[in-house]
Amino acid sequence: MLQVLQLNFKKTIRFLHLWLGLISGLVVFILGLSGSIYAFADELKEWLYQDRLRVEIPAGASRLPLSKLLPIAEEAMGKERKISRGELSQAPGRTYMFRAMKLNRNAFGYWNYYEYYHKVYLNPYTGQVVYKENAKKEFFTVVLALHMNLLMGDNVGHFIVQWSVVCFVILLISGLVLWWPKNWKRKQLKKSFSIKWGAKFKRLNYDLHNVSGFYSLLILMVIALTGLMWSFELTTEKKSKVLSDTTKMAGAMPADRILDQALKASPETAYFLYNFPAAKSGTVNVSAYQSDMNLYDRVQYRFDRYSGTLLQKGLEFNKQPLGTQLISMNYDLHTGSALGLTGKVLAFLAGLVAAALPVTGFLIWWKKGKKQI
Image 1 (cartoon, helix red, strand yellow):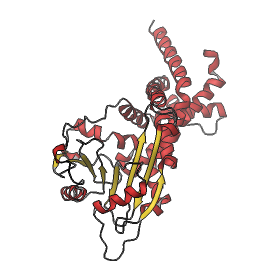
Image 2: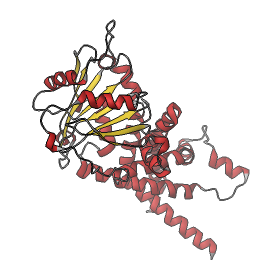
Image 3: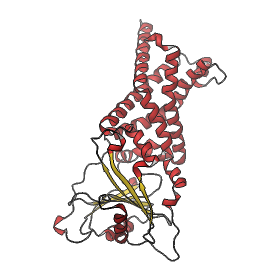
């Protein structure tokens, strides 16, 4: 009786694994491949985009005040595009980047989703416009959009990606059940844990699917679950109730004072993300990233946009509760950067395995599994 139940259970798992794989396989292939490409996006940009990221420092020069650089960036961007963020690197010889982006979240298709997305790179020592970029056409922006919503926009693409990843998590679990050795004798274990490279195509393909899937399961599970954390907005921070004092609206935004306070509070910052408020009562949100690689190691500040008064300071990463730390690390766990370069390599390889699993799985079904339907 027990043996019959086990056989029925295995048959049900195999059926579930097959159909979920057929339903989500193409999307998983795209996500795995695009994720692998994007894994080293920062490093590739450093190599490919030196013309816009680096400048020579004039002898004896220091960075110009932000209040002098902003009008230059705004003029270069054009009146029809409002700057929403500045990326202000504190490394010597690095440009400041300002971006203007407007999304239509209800639109279908990549080109409709981004109404515009432009970046302006400035030499912070001279104020010279180094480069103007239509980021909508930039390669890594397209790859990221492919990874996040299949170039279809949020309403359709995000939905497909979200539930395909749910299917992928179930596939990983059901795959482990199907992989599990019938017994733990040496011959069976060798078959389960090693790829027979000299075998014929059918056996080699089977081993590539099962063995590579097993070895990458833990990494793929972390990547999938952290992706779902985003997808279901479980990492979204609650909107702060702190607001700017609109009775002090007269005068320009005290950008220099705000940046100076943030720099004094976080003197070891690698770069600042300076977010400009859209609403009149909105605050200037400044994130001080302590590392170029890890996004979790940051301190967040909120300033009154009119007076420059510090309204709120977030906790440093090492002072946050464990649960908050895990949420803060979600992106770094997803990309592997939480473990530095080694983690990125693992994420890159895992992405390739994820892309290969639907292909090898489809070939197993095509050669043998069709008769099971």
